[in-house]
Image (cartoon, rainbow, N blue to C red; front, side, top):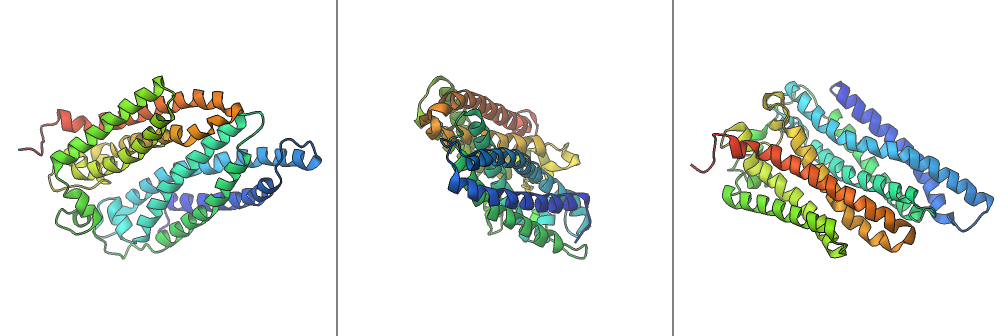
Length: 334
């Protein structure tokens, strides 16, 4: 294992997260089984105290998962200099393929942790705590995923050695390859561009309509579009957006833009994309809970904030990622 501050922070932090979540799950099982808000028994009062304590702890614990996703990407990019043949995070991840699974797990946890925090926030705003059982059931289901996350991190970083000779983005994101990454790199530019900007336009159209309409269908559409835009945007980054930053028609790496040579522009791009996607899925996730009388006003108010945040993050993503496409001298259409 390479001793790097980011690696130690990720493994140490994830270990603490798993231990604290195990503590929360033990109490959560009892809360799910015995919670009865209408009761004034000593047991119920004890459960209410426990749920407040556990919820506060888990807010910070799962909040770490949001930071950990960014730290993981930053760390694997930073350690690429340790490996022969690596020029960016792609080389670090290829040095031990378990890293790709760890990255995917981090992304899933990023969204699920955020949803739990939002669920806990909504529950705390209602006088009768109507979401206690759902949020603890979700927490119990998150525990195996957190255990998998720690396991993958340990396996990935323990399997790294400076003696490893690895391949990098030039081979993985080559247009002539037969992998998924090569397929994305070889996507035809104009149709991909039309799909990308068309999807973005549709996303903003539905988002604006959500601000002026209470339609549940629009909220579900916004959630679906947010996820769709995420996948289309990743394809667009590999296909043409990153190429405009590199000004090299054959360079399709989605990680090099995280480096100093490109002014770390990848960070605002990915933060904007994932932030916009996360806040975009929340209206659809929570619309069904408006049937709970004590939550309706809170959800209505929060929905507007989520839509505005989603649009803000997504606008930032589009502006930053499209800047060289619009203003640069380089073009893929000559």
